Length: 250
Image: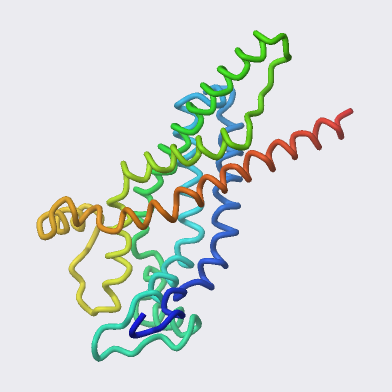
């Protein structure tokens, strides 16, 4: 606040807005496509289906959009003493390309791939919670003489997704710390982190377990409600599209 003022809190916002739409679109498209493709082998909603589909979705999204998040991270970090700040996003992209080449845009990608476990775990928990709630809802409806349903309430979708994201994030959070350290070190000129496992070992040795979970509270405050809203939107849009398919098939 004292150095950058209020605009400092919004450093890296344009790449975030630019990247979130394709990232989430690729993520859910890959998940839904893989989920259906695996249907003949693993029942939709089963642990195996959810894990594999969630992991494939994460791989696809991270691979295609990692350069966007790389630029965002660099724009958010203040330059080290004696180094010049990026003049803009074009300057950041040009500098990364000139100094680090194509591979510079994929710094931290292995940590991101590890983060795919978070997405897979989230989908696993989400599908299991959703299945149990749906089973409970249909039991209630049967007792009241009502027809069964394959839809839950908006509140059920929201809180199921929030729980799933919270548990998955806590379980896999160290990859967030490692990914950020790998991406930001080029701005300091000191390259201490060379890979995912080496980074984890070094952080744990120097900072202890707390270092691997630094900033997790703020991270959860951001990602849990965001993910819950995103999953709710996914379910509502998916249900709407299914209704359109049914109408058009008649």
